[in-house]
Length: 81
Image (cartoon, rainbow, N blue to C red; front, side, top):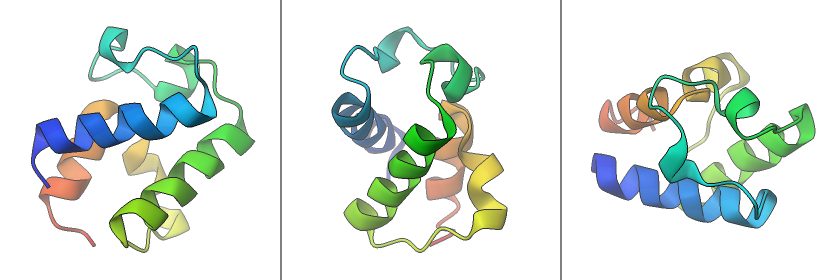
């Protein structure tokens, strides 16, 4: 998945979880949970939606890699799925 596709997917998913979230204003290295005020259930819903939309099984051990936009892009570029 290309970086722009990953960012668009993240924005779309987070728009359904936290409609007030504006991913375009989040620095690439910022923790999404803090930047967008996501609680643990929101983040779990986000990861679950990533799995459903990409078909990528995301092990719990990989979740810390998904905390930032740059981490998400790297994760999907590495074809970890």
